[in-house]
Image (cartoon, rainbow, N blue to C red; front, top):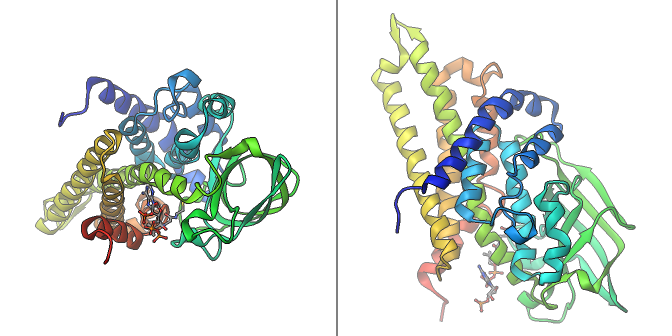
Length: 383
Ligand code: COS
């Protein structure tokens, strides 16, 4: 196994880094302040084919290699976590179609998503079904050659701006617990679908998080992904491949905070010397660097294992998100500490990065769920 990125991967990483430094970073503070989704940066990602990364080449994409997607999310998130999430959610929404969609369904939905003309979102979570995803209560009732969807979804990233929505709904209440759900692709707008509200969030403020309601929404049977009852497995297989994207976002946020803190420690003088030359500050920076690199290496390794079809893909996926999310929280918190009072005000980006880091410990499965997945992989099924 290669322990270095390939030349192509390095070129991709460096190209996205330059774009992020030049065009994303200058917008980050304003996106956070206004709480508005950055349509200009969505167009920028589309123009530069970054939104094409998760899609197969035959549908206008760049191949969907997981490490490449994560390198891009990392570099975007280093400048602006909201912008990194545009790519991460596009991948999350595309995965159920890649995993369970027919060739016809992929040909129908992928091209405008790969071009960035359309956005897609992933609607699994409900108010009463977060960690316990199988407990979802939204229903899809068969009616002739269509299904009728009723219910509500909550905490849906991009739910209010997406053109396509993958919705998980109960098709058979009587089926065994993990066979109740089926997955459907909704083409929005459609009658009966509404955005009930947008959340006011601690971080990732430019990324809309929506509560969605479905009141007799008709979806053709041809928009079902896989067979009836496959929904839970499709969702789990999706998360196995999408959690590294959140780990990449976390590594990017940590790296961004480390760079700001390092620069500050070089320039800020107290007691007649650079604060970085005080051992306590130097040691903090060293730990931040080592921890960020450790999380990054686990992420890259996880990507290659998952791409290779490792039997323990769920474990790799959960481990990289667990380590990267906790690292981002620790490193951004320490970056605020290095900057002292300046870290706590919005003159510097580290307070934003600290707020943004927190979500990486929560979404696409809390850190507690990641530990549960890893522990189950270690222990196997109970007797
Ligand atoms: N790949 C394929 N199939 C899987 C799978 C995976 N990674 N994980 C589970 N399954 C299938 C299996 O068929 C499994 O059956 P077996 O017991 O025969 O293996 C079945 O699903 C049930 O799995 P499990 O018993 O582990 O399900 P639980 O209800 O206990 O839930 C967790 C497992 C907690 C891991 C799952 O509900 C989860 O990931 N929750 C967090 C949800 C989440 O991340 N939400 C964020 C929403 S997106 S922002």
